[in-house]
Amino acid sequence: MPDIEPTSPARPRLLVSVRGPDEALTALRAGADLIDAKDPERGALGALAPETVRAIVAEVGGRAVTSAVAGDGTGTGIAAAIAAMAATGVDFIKIAVGAADDAALAEAAARAPGRVIGVLFAEDGVTDGWAAHSALRLAAAGFAGAMIDTRGKSGIALPALMTATQLAAFVARCRAHGLMSGLAGSLGLADIPALSGLGPDYLGFRGGLCRGGNRREALDGARVAQAVAAMRTGLRADAA
Image (cartoon, rainbow, N blue to C red):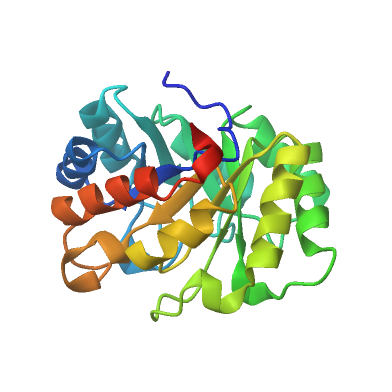
């Protein structure tokens, strides 16, 4: 399995969401660090069929970290959705956790120990203790990491919904509790320098790296390569 330990605060890595093996190969060839399986036609956390995820994992072949969205935590429930996706061999499984109680979170984490990432939505409201409380709950339940994303995909990016101070607090709390951290949500290349400086382990992209900036269009390898270059040049001066 690829290196999946949290990075230092100075070195975030690039997560690219893909909808099939062809896009996975495009992202991999362009230098993406994490290939994330997701159905862009089904919202922020639309799950692909397990057989499609297996094909993506096979295409990546261990050359990058892989993750897959297991859904929004509704329907069959968090634990069952995670168990089904864990069987594909993907490195990490992402699922929304906002409505789950502590018992449900613990059961979910137990279905794929060390592999579950909890996704929180910026639109759900941010209070002073939100970052601390969310990180504490997920760490106590046995999650491997946490990510903030945007539920709506109308072009309103994460930095328009949460301040840099709030995002930095989330990243810091995750690190304090031993969780990997990720920031995503309609991000574009212009968002990379500021968000990289907050020290997340991953920055997540889909629409900003697709043709025409449309998340439902095909992934653009040239845009992925631009993002990879921006991640490298956008590091803080003390990253060396």
